[in-house]
Image 1: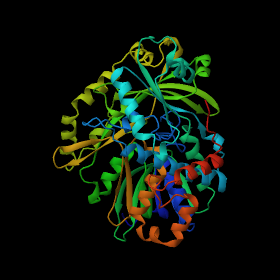
Image 2: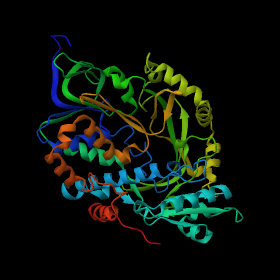
Image 3: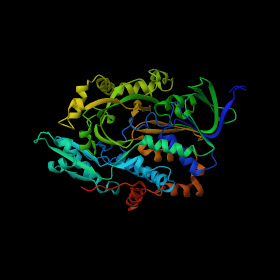
Image 4: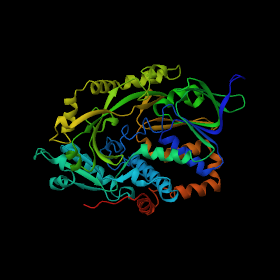
Length: 502
């Protein structure tokens, strides 16, 4: 930094990006240490405009109740449950924190962002039915999946999911699981409410229209950030002891500019998202469920289709998708040069290797991008046999950037998940990746705290406060009998959730 450069903000903490991750980390830090000064830098005009926006993400409240890609069938025929259990527990942790914000802090009305919507898995064909039954038996005895039910009875499924069964071939073998504890979440509303709370503090400042262009470690040990104000077109400077990069698809380029050794070798594979949105209010009224199916053979995990009830801004909506597409943009409002600009000497080989090993994925994405409206309707018809093309329209969802990382054997591997990359000294952390992101935001930010504030996390002061915000903190819902049930009972009351009965 040059002597003549004027520092606009000096803070303990800088959060880049005003999405659900920065909001969560900001509130956690402010509750744990009320004296921290925090600056938030966001390139758009408001919070939650990109991936956290309700129309840009699935909003399922990913809890692994219905997402079949979290339970893979192994070569020996058994079902791998580790990831499903991990995600289910992480979602309960998120609900505990949101319950604290809603019931104890009273900074948000839960009716504005979370609702009970049953989660279903629905499959057809002998092989898929066999898989779903095995999955049910593998999960049903875990407390985290208490209440999961399974049926092959068509009359029962017709009662649960009338749109899915009307007009279906009566000879087709089908099966479904149901979880009444499922939820729908408007992460956009939740994010904006948390930022509204943060902005109520005189030492928290949220700056919009700030496009962070560079960051480097200064001689004084602080991080120096340079941003471009998109309104005034002026260059601005910011300093902080700790930086969190939570800019969604924009995180990778900024992490690369930090030059921390831990960032070496990471790359990103961008994927665009699309939905079919129902325009017919009568159809929307007939469906109240999140129905997840099984991805077609050869399709990537991100392609798992779902017929999805959403509650957005007080209105019930119905979406189907997602449809993927090939893109080189890292953000919905990004640049087509994002992918090219992310290439560096230390990540180009892992990215090329991952590309070579995932040629079917590239082919799949291109084929998705070339689909016509009728092609998309045909995919929907498998879940809604009596669908009418004129009742649906295409809407563009958010961008996702899948993580590519070094691998000794493969050279580079494509990861379908999220990854925290933190500097060894704890002065900087970045979040890369996508699903199940928002739903597990609290667990992910607890990981950031452990990586970057290890001494504080060991203090009784922080431990006690974390237990107040997240009562199960430090315990395992998978290993402590009764802990999950007690947690759910508490969060149901705090969040006004209702266990549905059929």
